[in-house]
Image (cartoon, rainbow, N blue to C red; front, side):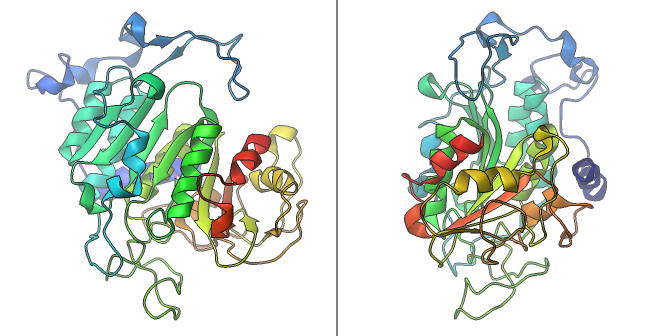
Length: 380
């Protein structure tokens, strides 16, 4: 429910008029229809080539008895250079540490990015492309081996705004966030490796160094990651500590759109081993049904097979308890854990909501050959 409140608050508070297809005679040509506002999504005919009928017997998506999947990305323009290549560190062209090159993202950008996500999911690819273009974002699709992938990226790659990859076909119920992809590139490599290995539904990548901005985040919290190493307020370029970004809005949208999906944040830490949490240090209650098992307990069981120093911040799992890198200040975790979410920075929840996990690991356990691939495989 708090994610629905987040969605309502986003549009109410921003007061941004709809930038989607107009009704009547003034429909933009890019909408590709007449009177778009009057079209029921159920009335739209999907071309035959948009339907995916192959059965790959994937461990994550057994579609033997399921209806054919529709590739929502099929009518998008093809991404120049491919989808996953756009996440290479050089391709991000990220604002650097101390550069002051990352600026607060506009409320128009946040609201219109949400509409672009929504339009694609509702089966209006032309409107989704148009919405993205209105705020200087590009929406495109993969081709060949990347069929079914959609990519949102800013036209000006140097802004530091997030990249979002959505998998339309054969997706496992997982949303992955890499907020510190630039300052800790091993987390980006691990996130990409897991996204591809387990066919996760969404990958959201922070595309600025966490210390690029001189403006501090109004969200409560401290960090020693910037400056002289002493504790101070995080910058708005720290995607885990600021809720006014496309990175954060994308988490809200996809968590709302797929309410049964797990949501994971990948982070790096100076300690050895791996620290798992649900974004709090509270105990984990027992599930009344197997399908309600909290994500932190599911991942704890999978991590218990890892030989390295693995701990959890939450009592009540299969791992030893040690409070280190618990992600309590992470705004995406707070959004998922609730109970309330709006455009103000979310307060720290008393307990986890069951869907979110924060995984911090030493750099040598991340990277493209991360042990987390097997962990997520087992957990899913």
